Structure formats: C-alpha cells, structure tokens
Amino acid sequence: MKYEAVIGLEVHAQMLTETKIFCGCSTKFGSEPNTQTCPICIGMPGVLPVLNKKALEFAIRTGLATNCKISSYSRFARKNYFYPDLPKGYQISQYELPICEHGLIEIVVDNEIKKIGITRIHMEEDAGKNIHEGAGNYSFVDLNRAGVPLMEIVSEPDIRSPKEAAEYMKKLRAILRYLGVCDGNMEQGSLRCDANVSIRQVGQKELGTRAEVKNINSFKFVEKALEYEIKRQIKVIEDGGKIIQETRLWDSDRGITESMRGKEEAHDYRYFPEPDLVPLTVEQKWVDEIRAALPELPDIKRKRFVSEYALPEYDADLLTSEKSIADWFEAAVKAGRCDSQPGGQAKAVSNWMMGELMKLLNEENRTIGECALKPVQLADMLKLIDKGIISGKIAKTVFEEMYKTGKDAEVIVKERGLVQVSDEGAIEKAVDEVIAKNPKEVERFKAGDEKLLGFFVGRIMKMTKGKANPQMVNEILKKKLSLIQYH
Ligand code: ADP
Ligand code: MG
Ligand code: ZN
Image (cartoon, rainbow, N blue to C red; front, side):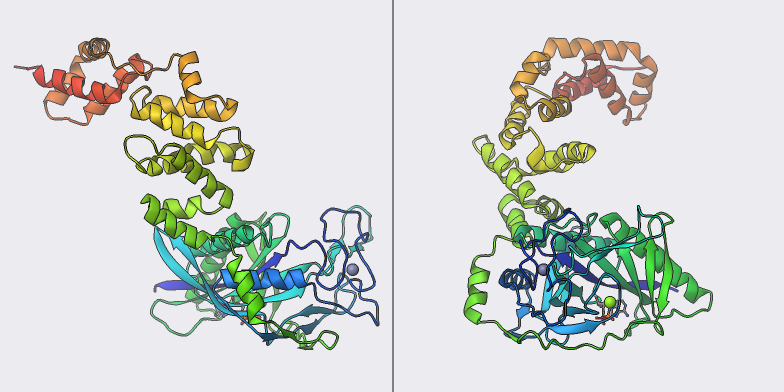
C-alpha cells in the first residue's frame, strides 16, 4: 500500500509592535514579571480594549504579502476557556470574519516551485506565561506577554511532506522578516507552529482523520515531528487500527509525539462576537497605501534573481531567504561586473556564499551582517581566480582567512606566498617526477584505467602544495602519459 501525507500548518507569529494589541503596555521581551501590565491586559472587569492600529496594519501587510484578500469588514470574537495565564477567562481573537483570507505562498522543493494555499490570517492577543521553576511547590503567572499581538496564519492542507512543511515555515518566516512584522525566532517562541497531519492512500480524494501536533519550536523539529507522526499513523493503519482525531505533543528529547487529548476532551470555545470592540471596517485607500509601501518580497526577488542572474531556483531561493543575504549577493555581483564576463560570476558568487560562507557563518552561529568579510572582497578574490593568479583550491584557504581576518585576498596571497604556479618548466618537472615514482599506476593507466588520471593530478598538486595551475597540470600530464609506450 502506498500512502501520502496531508499536512496543514497553523502558525502563530508575534507582531513586532511597540505596544500591546488592546492597551498601551510595552511588548518588550525579558522585563521583570508583571511590570508591563495594566487593568486592560490583566483583564479587570469593566475595562475597555482599543485596537492598536499598527497591529492591524501589520496583519494587512502580511495578508497582502501572502496574496490574501483583505476583508473590508471583519470582527473580533471571544474564545472562552480557563487557564491561569488567561485571567479574563477568554482570549480576544477573530473567528468567522478574519482580516485576511484566500492567499497563497510559493515554496521551492527539489528546484521546483509549489504553491501552498493560505486559508486565513487573523489577529488575536497572546496569553501570559505560567512559571513552574524555581519556587518549590509554587507556580507563578507572568502577564507581561498577555495582550501581545499575534497573527495566526492557517494554511490549506496542501503540504505533502515534512520537507515541504519545513520549506513552508522558512518561506513564511522570510516573508514576515522582510515585512518587519515579526522577528521569526522559533526558539524564543515569537514564531510557533502547530502541525495538522493525516495520511491517505495515493489516489484517494477524501482526507484522512488528522492529528494535531503541538509544541514544535524549531525548523528541525517541524520535519522530525512530522516524520515521526506520519510513520506512526501508517503503522496504526497497517496494523489494522484506526486514526483517531486528537491533539498530540511533540517530545523533542525522546523524538516522539504523545497523545495529549482526544476529540471528546477538546475544548468547546463558545465563540461569540466581542461586544467590547466595534466591527472593523478597512478602507481600500489605506490597503492600497500599505500595498504600495511593501518591500520587494522573497518570491519576487527569487524570480528576479533567476531571470537577472540566470541562477537555478534552488540558489535563488536560498539567497533570498534573508534580505541581508540577498543584498550581500547583489553587492558582490555588482562589485565584480567590470571583468571579462559581465554577470557571469553570479553563479560563482552564489556558490561561494551557499558553500563556504554559509558554512563558516553556521559554525559560529553568526549572521551575514556580523562577519568582517565584505562583498567586494569576494568579488576581488574571484578576479584572482579568473586571472589564474590563484587556483580554486587555494581560493578556499584564502577565503577562510579573508573571512576570519577581514584582509583582502591579494594581501593574503602575497603574505602567504599562495600565487599559483603557471611556470611550464616547473610543472613539467613535477609531472615527470610523479610519473617516474608510480610506474605501476602508469602501466594500469595505459592498459585503459583512465580513472587514474585523478590520482596523478592529486599527487602533483600535493607535490606543489596545491599551487600548480590545475589546467596546465592536466594538459601536461595527458601529453606526457600519451607519449609513454609499453611493449
Ligand atoms: P481547527 O480550527 O480545529 O484547528 P481547522 O479546520 O481550522 O481546524 O484546520 C486547521 C488546520 O488543519 C488547517 O491548516 C488545515 O489545512 C489542516 N487540516 C484540516 N483537515 C486536515 C486533514 N484531514 N489532514 C491534514 N490537515 C488538515
Ligand atoms: Mg487547530
Ligand atoms: Zn496593558
């Protein structure tokens, strides 16, 4: 039996507004507990909430960036439940009339574009936080987070694999960060994800029964939790069982999902229109203004990178994942424009960024803005390769040192004597020596084992400490080997 997974994500994004959604309290992170509260956000009776216009603008901005229809009329609703971090006994959210609907975003998987539908985006307030550590048998409630504005972004069940789910999360995060509406930090909880997942036989139209997996707080875990959950569901079915609709918790330490509550225990939130807030009417003129002020977004930038720089979708997608990375790339390409092939080095810049640069940044957990290396320095190093002054192999050493010290490639090459050897006599000498030292390999090569060419090149490069011009080595080596005759 062949199964396919069906996944829909519900993502909560904390908005980067200065103040809370229905009062003027600060949203600053990390202050002393309960110092950023007032009668409104701690839910005293008789107080009246007033909508933060910036939060509404951020939600509209996000809706426009994800190709949603912006509702000219929408409404807040009360979602009723009890928990100590929610003193009002209800959360102000949106229900049947959300601010944005019917959107879509594009993801790139295996170098192909796939569209994922956005069902809705609505605004709501965050709850407080219960603290269980550090006071023996007591628990505390910190309400600084109560009333911080959130967006809930709900996808259609269009996602088909854990990889696609992770790509979707990455793309959504990129969009939110480009827009400046959310910092996208999953570890700190400013971006949270609940994953709904079901399986069905390939070819089947109806959706299977889904489980909702909560508590996923990193991109890695989006994939891991879904992989586990899909395997679990397939096993249940193959063992003759049935999937039950339930909420499951991802346990990252153990790498498993566990049942938290079934359908019977599911909350009935008794949603009803929020009587303390008037319905929202949004004027088209304002929406148009917000649209006109949108930055160039990741998908549009990606398409431009493909057409303008002839990059593969994969490269363009990665390079546009952060605006700072995209800007760095374009600066490096521009800085190198004057050489023989205009624009021709875009792919080389991309390769160095996606390979060496990202590797070094990841090792130190740094962002591109935090490194000493400047785009023009990469462009200058590529020129040295182009002119044959350094080999691609030596360039790796040069690049690493440029990254660490911020020195220019030319300086490093001079200081460390890394100039490529293009002297024919010197290379011939090395080739002769390697041929003389390895008669058995020469014999095998002559007998038809052409793979051995790489072996010889490797020995010659080693002998010349990687400095020999590889193209010349290849040419001279082939010529010399073809001259040798065995009887
Ligand atoms: P709820 O509000 O109870 O969480 P929704 O119907 O709004 O439920 O769906 C929430 C999410 O679940 C959406 O992202 C949707 O795409 C996804 N979803 C719905 N049905 C399925 C299913 N059978 N399999 C996988 N995902 C699903
Ligand atoms: Mg849900
Ligand atoms: Zn307040």
